[in-house]
Image (cartoon, rainbow, N blue to C red):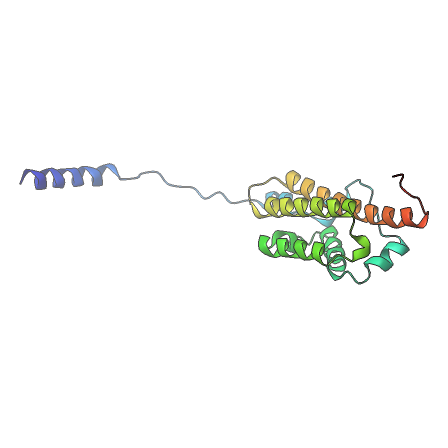
Length: 174
């Protein structure tokens, strides 16, 4: 009987103490605050970096590399502030990057180009996480976009160097 009485008294105390008089406020963003978080094409165009494109010889070698062509399409969309590919499902992005590496033409399979694709993989996954987490600052997101664009440019530069090196018939000393 004592336990039942203690239980009832405890339950009553719990009910009276759990009363919450605080009113939660909903803070709404102003249109200016919303605009300040959105990444625009103008923001991306303001980046200062060396943007390398493929040389004619490199273009011929990469012409049948479908995943590379798709990467270029997505980079052009990214430059227009379309973040959907890099903001999407991480598994799809990882699968795309794996296929990019596995479908690479034999003529491009060098350690240097593989290293640039590894860097691209890392920067793309980093950008995905920066874009997926809502409380990341706009500056950090822009920095992630810039790093990815630089990485793609470095991949293009490395592909160009490979064909320039072959064209000049430079032999490595052994």
